[in-house]
Image 1: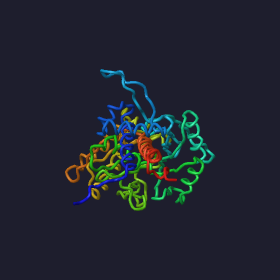
Image 2 (image 1 turned 90 degrees about the vertical axis):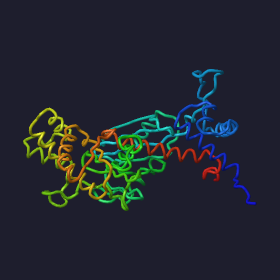
Image 3 (image 1 turned 90 degrees about the horizontal axis):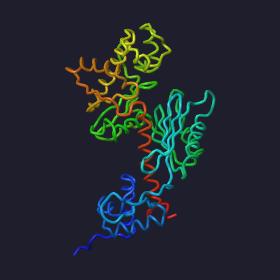
Image 4 (image 1 turned 30 degrees about the vertical axis):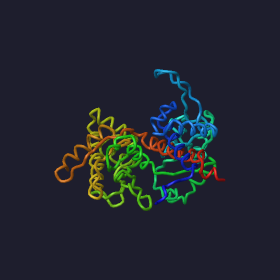
Length: 379
C-alpha cells in the first residue's frame, strides 16, 4: 500500500502564512472569521499562523470590527513598519519617486526636474531620501522605469550608447538596496495589463508617445521584452517617403511638422494638438499627419504580431491624435482592421506600472523573510 504524501509542519505553516499575508495585502484589515472565509483555512490554523506572525511583527492589531452583528471582533493587518519599495519614473526632464508599502498603497511622493548640471543618480537618491523622511520603515528595493533599451542584466542603451549597468550599480550602491531597471513603455504596458484597458485582452500593443514613440507588446498575457530588450523600439520603423533610419514621431519630428505648417516649432506636441482641437488649420494638418504615421506603425506591428488591439498612451491618447489615427485606421480597415483603444492612465502609466511591480516585488521579499523556511530564516 502506497504511503500518503506528507510534508514537514514548517512547510505547511509557510504556505498558510503566505496565504494570510497575501490576503491581508489584497484586502486590508480583516477579522479572524474573515480570514477563515477568504483563505479556506480552519479557524485553528488561522489562529496558530496569526500567533506566529504576531510574534515576528509581521501583523499587528488594526482595531475592532463594529459593522457586523454580534460581539465585536478584533481586526489584524500587515504591520505598518514592514518597509517600503521605491517606484521611480525617469524621463528626459525629471524624476518622479513614490514609496509604496506591501499593499501597494503610496505612502510618500516626490517629483522634481533634473538639474541642468548634476548627477542624475544623486538627484533620484535625494528624492527617495525626501520620501523616506516622511515614513517609518526600511527601503527594501527600487523599480526604476527609464526611456531607452534595457538589457536582461539591467544595462541601459540610449542615445549615448550602452552604460554597461553603471546606472543600476550606482543607484543600488547609494540607495543601499537592490534596484531593478525597466523600460518605461514596458512598465506602462504592465499597468494596462494588470488594471487598465488591456486587462481584458489576451494580446495588445501599447503605443506611447512622449519625447519619442515606443511600444509595449503583450502576447498571451505576457509582456514581450525580446532577446536583448529591443522589442517595442518602433520609432524607426521604415515609412514611405521617410528615409531609412528617420524617426517616425517625436519632438524633433513635430518641430519639423510645425515649420512646414506655419506653426511655432517651440510649442509642445500637446499645445499643437490642443490647437487642432480648437480648429487651427495648421494644427489640424499636423494632427492628421501624426495620426497617419502612428497608424502605419500599428499596421506594421499588426502584420507581424496580429495583436487583439492597440492602446494609445501618453500624448498619443490626446483626442485630436486619436481622431487622426482613427480616420486612417478606418481607411485601412478593408485590407487590415486595426482596433484602437485609449490608455486608462495617460502620461502616468509608466509610474503606475512601476508602482505595481515594486509592490509585488516588495511582498515577495518581505514575506519570504517573515515565514519559516525562508532564505533569511536559515542564515
